[in-house]
Length: 410
Image 1 (cartoon, rainbow, N blue to C red):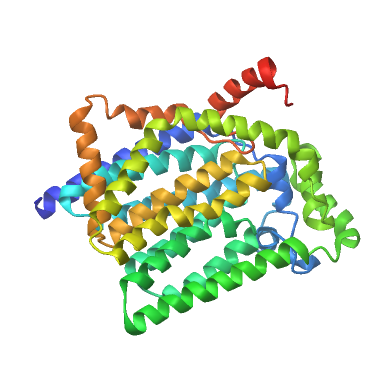
Image 2 (tube, rainbow, N blue to C red):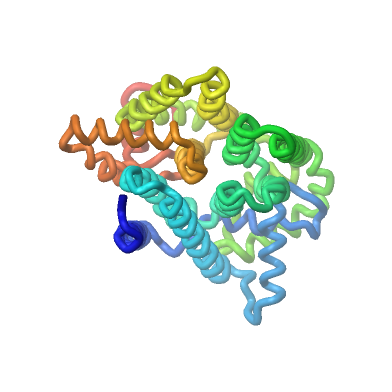
């Protein structure tokens, strides 16, 4: 057991290391740019009705009204996006501090590795030029807030409006990140009794119904004002985009209801080839993940406990529809990485004995067997940053070669 002074020193050392790693990633990948897809989203707002993906644009217009400067231009988008992303990264740091503060001394080092693993993906992706300002990072911000509520078990009813707000940012939240709340609430349902269990059943049930209804509404019933508002949205998107560029496919889909699936089909086939390449390159992490959950299920003493932990990979399956119907595989890979990382870290903060002990035992076994085990953290550098349609640069190069040599998909 560490004394209070030694423990605080160890936590400070880790937080400093986390900051330096993230700062290095920022310096490496930040390009001071927001691509036209992400500027175009800010042109959607609720002055046109309760339309899909309208929350961020509504907040952006409100910010323009309250600030003494005009931000309805590309420079304004870049500056606001940078500030917002930096605030979200600071919240991630605060979440990391909470998790290590709640972790027992014995397990501290290995929990820090998991935090570093997730932070490297997070910071490199959301500061990079392809994803800077993408709605996903704001959904992550609200998810972090929800994790604070879950870990401290305070004001957990607010998980319902947090889930609703996330769906108003992007209805894809239902498949991408809602599974984090869904699993942790299901975990608490199975871990409690009486009034506490009823509370978690209600939070889970109400939030699930709300996001499901919003998903259906935004996908099928929110295009009623399309042609009438199209020109206005294009005009605003032109103001916000770099040199007036905007993403017409996004406007056509969200405002006019035109499905781009047929046009995206060749890219989608390409995505599956690239995902196969990515899976091969990530076998070390996949094998460790399978081993971890196998050990967790084996350690669970009762059928109820086994169900509780079996739900972790089952809830991850909510991401699968995104792989089947959309082409942004880099984003879906991040969603899976975020789900497993944040669920495991939240359970550790909640003092789940089996998760904490099995993670520690696995990582200690790997370090004892392989002198180069620490290279697993360095290997991540070859995988980042995750892109959007493509997964990352390495898998893109490999898949391009395979396509040009054998498949001729694109």
